[in-house]
Length: 343
Image 1: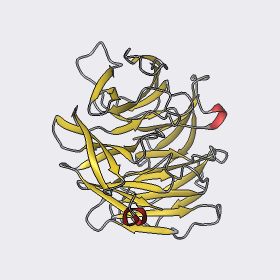
Image 2 (image 1 turned 135 degrees about the horizontal axis):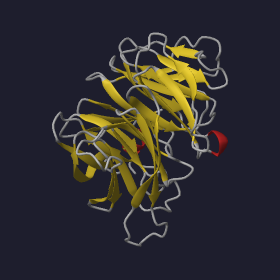
Image 3 (image 1 turned 90 degrees about the horizontal axis):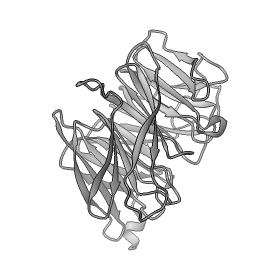
Image 4 (image 1 turned 60 degrees about the horizontal axis):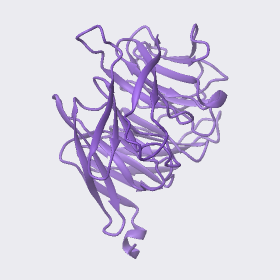
């Protein structure tokens, strides 16, 4: 690896189309590999796998697949030991699981929970359980969340395909559900939370689905678009409301009262990502072209200012992901560009 690329703090890739969905691969043998989803307002969209060539210091597209409609989210299988097949999932009209090979990506299964209708209820988001990679939870505009069980055939090299079945489907909110995320609390397998158009954050336990806990309700009942759990301390989660310039930090031990509000953004916040390796750092990004890193260790004192700010001169940042197995790097998307930033 040359000295020049060793010192590089930012790598940039320009895709052929505007980008929205994006995620880091976590496999130990695939450093600096990301999946990108196009955002074109028509049926034909793409998902592209890119990888950083550390010698040339350039991102190289490895493979591209056709995807119906823009992917609302992309996640690589949370397999940081490399023992499962090299899988990738996308949400859109349905949940799809793909298998990545060197030069091509093959569809393993399409998971549809609405067999009796010609219409599908689009999926707004999903989460892949990090403790049990056989669990995926999806959120939909039809007010439900669905927990899928995958059979991924642990043995590598076997070509048998991935299959999936519905473990449970529940009505999660009074209106559309916009995001879902598994919590690391209680073993990390059974607890998850969701946010939606009714302006609430609700928490569920797969072992006791007869009731849910409302952790927070937006005072103006503004829809909540995203939520993310702190990766190191399962008591904390963050959420953002539609068109809001602030991020709300919640403590599940103190329901309904935010422990902090991060409000330095000068336009609406589009994404948030907790540090994979630290309980007190979170990164937020928005339409003001800024990605901000905050230190929340001082809570419940007010968090006035971020500790680090990066401005993407050319565009509104619509996606941010913090590399789970490469915690020194944050990835952002704006317009047609992917950038990874060393932090």
